[in-house]
Image (cartoon, rainbow, N blue to C red; front, side):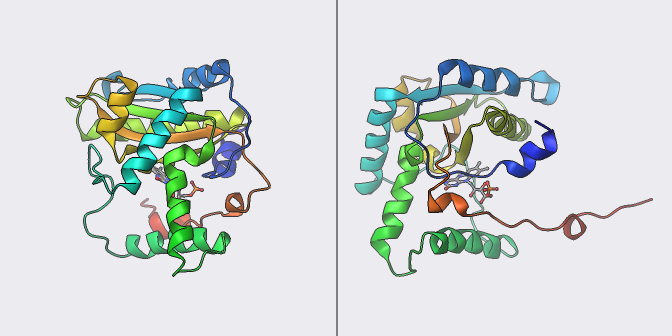
Length: 221
Ligand SMILES: Cc1cc2nc3c(=O)[nH]c(=O)nc-3n(C[C@H](O)[C@H](O)[C@H](O)COP(=O)(O)O)c2cc1C
């Protein structure tokens, strides 16, 4: 697969087939992604692959935490504290497009709630990946991490798999680390749904727009 094809083909998938992903396939994806660059070759990534019974029990706990109103608190601030333009509008459109694809009306609180809850089940993907980082690392390592995450998603694409990076899976970091018996000091970066795309699912027909190169690039000669 050409890099360009993988880049253009990748999209966030929010409905998956009930088909397991082989451990070997996930290992191959991570084996390719580990070649991502990082400042001074720090390689800040630490990954937990969660599937089977462990996934079911973790997702139940995440859903319950949300339903019980446990305050969400990521290990770092992912989204802006104050949404300003043009990001405010892009974010709004992103949400609106998702709900309109699913034909969920603005005031249909129940359906919106259920769609959001699906996040905590990694949209029923057979595998849920969790990404952690040592807290002694700084902002630059978040940048390195992004390169690794995209490498995972593009490698998944090549394997015929689909993904969705999920900040939502990082909203209850203590719960996740306790459940996985993971080092509580590590920063939970985000989660990721991984599996085979359900191509018949309406939610997966949703494609997000992008700004043109000309809108964000200036050439100086
Ligand atoms: C780090 C990160 C976290 C994200 N978190 C979520 C999430 O919690 N739930 C969700 O449905 N989508 C999530 N997304 C997907 C974005 O909404 C999506 O990437 C964006 O709208 C662009 O669409 P595309 O991925 O289909 O190209 C996340 C993406 C990234 C990169």
